[in-house]
Length: 281
View 1 (cartoon, helix red, strand yellow):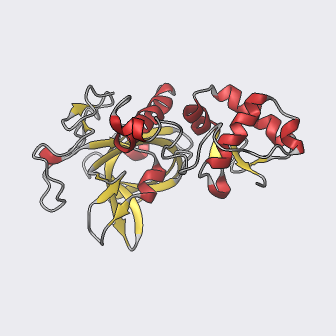
View 2: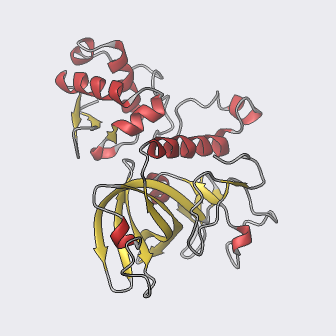
């Protein structure tokens, strides 16, 4: 992670190490304090770690206006996800990337002189593998995609977890302020309000009715259920990795609790055996 989360810049530890626009600046306003999208140069760019859900939900005041996440203008973004589809074209490769919070298309334009290089995107990234993407959010025909400057395979699965933690921290910093600061105190602390959760109370917050199914499961499983009740998972639910990161427990614990809850008839698995949604609440 970078060293600063205030108004200045710092370098992300996941520097692209290449690409024309890879950059590496994170967190904060532009160097000149400008929030204008028009004529924004690369010296004014920031690199924001995000989830795909944040990109899908990003606000845009009008067509061609800058996108905003947590009320702040974003330029460069980076995220980690799994490659669900690859569509090679003559001039670009389109990847369909899924990070457990949403799915988005990533377009990587090809260098005609390097298309046969083994390190080119279409050769370096395989289906069902994790990748890290750097790029900019774009919109065409009211459909959002990411124009990628650089995309690389993830060789250490820890990077998936690190990224989710970094994105969560960044979101909480900008929405609740620095830890222990006035903004954090005014909002009652960090809680579980993140890009994975709605404005509810999160795990352990509010009163979750104790159904017959919930009485059959462990206390830890009830905590996972309480968190899911307040999460914005939609019909597709949320992956165990997302739940584990947000709740601060291991993926193994989430899977065990998910199995308990599914057996008790209060949750069900959706897109795969590690993605859970509330059956009925």
